[in-house]
Length: 157
Image 1 (cartoon, rainbow, N blue to C red):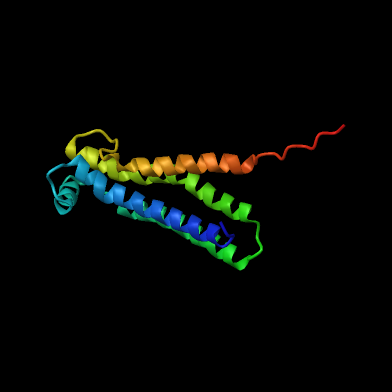
Image 2 (cartoon, helix red, strand yellow):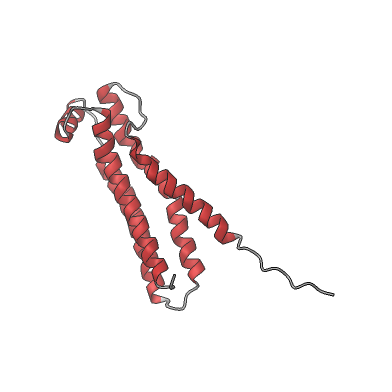
């Protein structure tokens, strides 16, 4: 993969993870928690119960990830001769933090849904798993990147 593709691929991946986290927290999980109700009905129920989906926090957490990804992208583009390993490491670290960021962002909406519909505070939609899977894969890739395969040493006679 050419060096210029690492920042672009990394940034795109982080943006997709952030968008998916927002969709999971503000659309898919509410619909799974209250099946048969529309999203506007769910929001009306939550408001009537005196709760809040905490959309601002969900968007802020996603926006922070996207902002950091674009900062890394711009840094990579400015430093054309930068070490591709360093660029990959930065995006992989952001990817590792996608899971805890998603969990943090989901806390408010999940509690609001639980209080409104008298359910558990856990996610009811299974579609958060791609974020956790991607985050785990980033962790594995980061570990592998930190410990590269060693070149075999020439035998000495």
